[in-house]
Length: 69
Image (cartoon, rainbow, N blue to C red; front, side):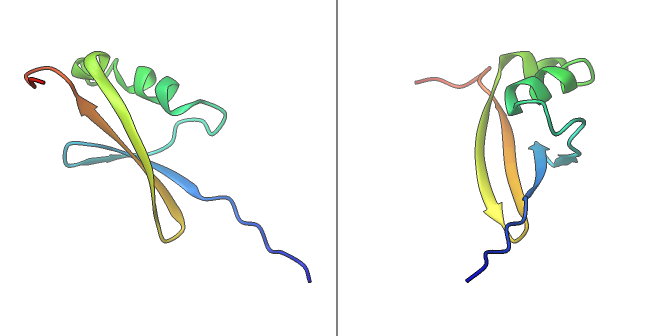
């Protein structure tokens, strides 16, 4: 029996925005650092995920500023 392996497309979300994967060789933390030039609040964020949704692996950037606990 042969297996058909498919790579999941990575998608990054920040708030309501969907961000494309700038380079598949980057780790999710490196992608967050890449987008921190455009969204400075990502410098104090964490990566959550991935959550598999169909053929996509969805990572979410969540800020830690303004949260307690």
